Image 1: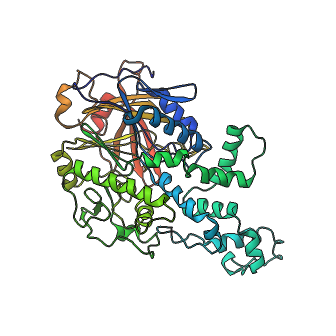
Image 2: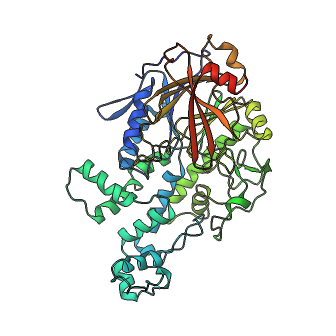
Image 3: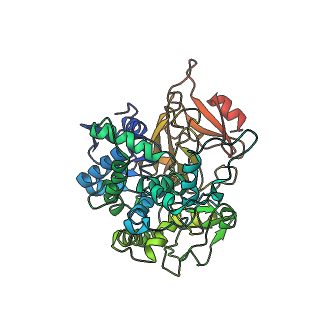
Length: 497
């Protein structure tokens, strides 16, 4: 295991290891597993240690050459361990069901519309094909320029020749799913998996379709997946329970599609609330556990409706809208950050509802936030664990950073390493259970400070040469992250504790 002990909290609580958002990065996924006390790899298979539960936070695929293998690993573990493996579905997972319809022979016969929620600067499929021809024409004369792709009117014969499933898939991934380059990454992964030196375009298309066909690993994950996982005092979702009001998001995204959300918006402190909302229900569900159950049942039906031939509408379309940027109050696309990417306190109504239903912690992924999980203290604690942009100078944007969260009741421990391989380890308690912490075990400095300025991001695993604990401080504004390392005494002086 990782070498850092996992101390027990209250009796009867499940021991949980939480890993989220590998996004196809197999090396990162395996490194997370190495950090854990509760899971390990043996013979290429994911194994659970006795009495441990794995919660996978979503987003298996899209940004590296390991999407297939991670999906297969998780699907195998779910089959072997059943309820001890809980799968939360992310937007990058569920949107692949679109390929069943959008790459069908019938769909290939016509120009595809831009999907709901596409950024307003998304180029059309026709423009994408025109760009392909533009790349093949001679350079413009000196001082001249090529016409814009949208102005290139492709002759029907040229359009027909270029309108292939590989090109349709490239456009879909690159311009409507935020998975730029995934077509070629899948080709590279297939070369590794099959041992073939050459994998053609058709094999790449087949691989994507097979993953969401009967027996496909991604479809198996979706069928067994959930949007909300409740374990003891902790609630897990992919994105969050709040997001910036849609009036802001609408500037960036197209919304002119049928079946878009037309219900009553619940807004508080500038954020729309997803907690309590279930598509198809006119009233919000107040009890959090009852809401989670209803939302998960709706999601399972949405998966079923999406794979039925033909798809059952409007639920199949609504489900795709729910997992993309738009105006649906969605736990998949939630975001607990302000417009400067700084964490925000949970609105009072959300905190009250969670506490009333017995939850003292919310754990989320989806939105990258620095080089290790961020802890936001409060009456209901928030842990943000997506670190997929931990090192923007690295080829994979991650570098060597990898962390997991292990939870038992009100106790949560982050174990991992930063992008420069510095080990980190810190434990925080939620709710009133802090009184049960062993002396020195509850690292109360983590999360302290000003999220609009400098705050304590993590505790380093080792003491300095003088025998004093060291902490990592962080400052965030947009995509700019700054870090400083200070001793405990320096931290207490700076943030006046």
